Every structure is written in structure tokens, then in C-alpha cells.
Image (tube, rainbow, N blue to C red; front, side, top):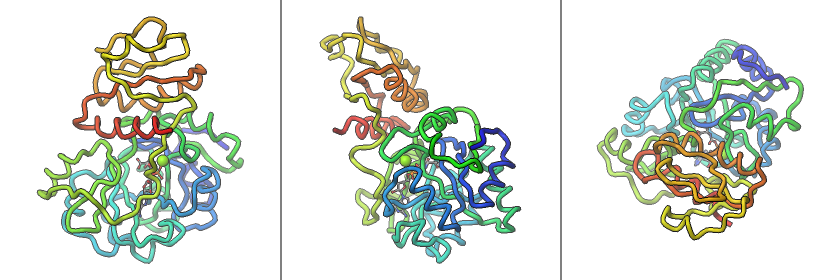
Length: 321
Ligand code: TXA
Ligand code: MG
């Protein structure tokens, strides 16, 4: 495995069917060419991910949408226009290009145009190398199944180093800007439905499309499990007022906005100034708790507007027994 910041090396590795860990604005992805079943099989094996959990296909721009999807409603095009490149994934009826080994045999495909400049450069270079401008890179978050997503290249090295071959590449693009995964929107019905919250909020989607976000979806998103994003430490969501009643024997960490004071004997994992920073530091703080050998992480959630809903979603899953 080679650690580099040269996108050419990552694009070449992918072109040859190897894995490339790629920086995105949300979290790091474990990338492989979306048209090579053997490369995709390695993605599943490396993560320990069940075969029926479909992968997000990352493409260079919205011109690729009709190559990968069959029926694209007007509101999906509006979302792509407004939020791509960016942390938004659209679930659409698939075209023949989106094979069973990508979609977990579902009839839909998840598409995203990422914003990170190095990732975009890899997509462009891979398009050149393969003479296929609509080439897709399938990339789940580069963590083992059920664990905390990585927001730095160092997190990936730490967690997956034994799993790579010498031809695989880790592309270091710095710490991820957003810090939690993309918003996933089911675009197969008459109105958009959020399958996974992220930076692009329900209010953003309603503003862009002029439609009310639907409450329920018939689409299965098998990766959105009740228990996910879990560190080894037990996560408990608490309110700031109850903090003084908690045990503080040095094995408990606290994650809360900076306005929340740290009780004596509790290890402050992070003190983000606002909700955006909370999202950015969330996964690194959960990893830090494990590195320190803490048994418990107390988390005081941020307000639920903007990316706050996504932070609380991740904390709730991390806290699930
Ligand atoms: O921000 C992100 O989306 C990151 C970066 C690397 O792009 N990727 C990511 O991938 O979070 P992953 O595999 O960890 O999560 C993908 C989620 C899973 O919950 C999966 O079930 C859902 O997307 N998904 C993928 N294809 C789908 C489909 N066709 N229908 C419904 N859900 C789908
Ligand atoms: Mg994931």
C-alpha cells in the first residue's frame, strides 16, 4: 500500500483494478472501479460488509446521471443542479450500467458527485485512462463494517492497514470538511424522501425542489442500521443539566459544544464552537475515546437544525447497544 497525495497514482491504481482510499468532503471512501466485479469484491471483503448492502457510485458530474440511471424525475435533476458537486447522494432507478454487484441486486442505484478537489481529479484522470467520462468509482466509507467512519488518511491506515495489497493506494487529502456522510435522498417516488440525514437538510431539499419531503420510502437502504458508527467505548446521549450527576473516575469522555463546561474528572474529547464543527470533529473524537481506553463517552447533542440532525442520527446509532 502506498500513501500519497498524488491523484495520478490513485487513478492509475483504480484503472488497474486495485483499491484506492479517497478523500471526500464528507468522509474517506474505499474506492474501486464500479465496472470491475473483482475489485468490488475486494471492497466488500476489506470492510467485512454484507453483500446485499449496496454501494454509492461516485461520478464526475451531473452529465453522467443518465448513463447510470433510467428514470430521473425533475426534482432529482433540480437537486443535482443545486447541490452537486457536494454531500448529496441520489437514489434513482438504475440503468444497465449499474450492475447487481454494485446495487446489492436492488433495482436502484445511489449516485453522488463529490466536491473534494483531489477526488474530482481522480475521477477526471480515471475517465481519461479508461476513455469513459461517465466511469464510476464505488466507494463506501473506508471503515470496517459497523465502525466509525474515517475523516483522515491516518484513521484509514490505523484501521485497515493489514487489508491492503502493495498495489493499493491511500490518497491523503487532509481532514474531511463536513465530517459526516452525505445526505441520501430516495428519488424514486413522487416526492424526495431522506434515507440518511447529512449536511443537505430537509429544509434545503424543500427549498430546492419546491416539494415537501416525504415521510416514508419503499426503498431499502440496508446500511442504515440501528447500531452503526460505534466506537468500543459505550456512547450515551445526555443533556448538559445531568452532567454533574455522572460518575467521573477518569474513564469517561465528554463530547459537547464549547458552551458546556467539563465536570471534574471527565476527559474532554472535543469542544466544538458550533454545530458544523461538531460534525467535523465527531468521528475523530469517538476514535480518540478508544485510543485513550475510555469506557464511556457522554455526548451532549447540538441543536437539530442544519447538520445537527445528522450529528444526532450518528450519535443515536453509535449509542445503540
Ligand atoms: O458521504 C458518503 O456518502 C460517503 C463518501 C465516501 O462518499 N460514502 C458512504 O458510503 O457513506 P457507505 O457505503 O458507507 O454508505 C452508503 C449508504 C448505505 O447505507 C447503503 O445502504 C446506501 O448508501 N445505499 C447505497 N445504494 C443504495 C441504493 N441503491 N438504495 C438505497 N440505499 C443505498
Ligand atoms: Mg459507511
